[in-house]
Amino acid sequence: MTTTDQTQDELSVGSKINGEATVIACHKVRERVVGDTYATWVALCVKSVDDYHPYVVWTVIARPEGMSAGSGDYAFTFAEGIELYEKRGGKA
Image (cartoon, rainbow, N blue to C red):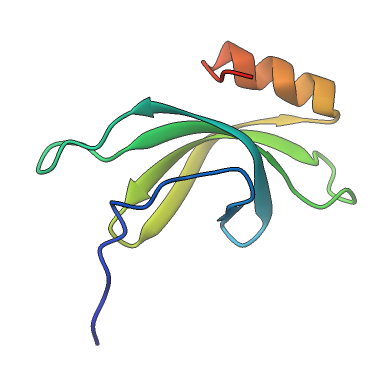
């Protein structure tokens, strides 16, 4: 089985994360340094409007196996989501 190194991928608006959320804003906070670090973004995503917290701000990392999201802050409204995104360094 051949795997593709996805560390060169870029996160952008419209990207799907974990098959459950769509990126609606993102800001790259760290460039990839080969052999040292992976590229990292802060991303505001929207999940299902039926979800208890439809908005989430994640740290997203371009890992060899694909985008990995973690360290979530969750919000009930878009306005709350934007506030959390900006607090974490996101740029509108």
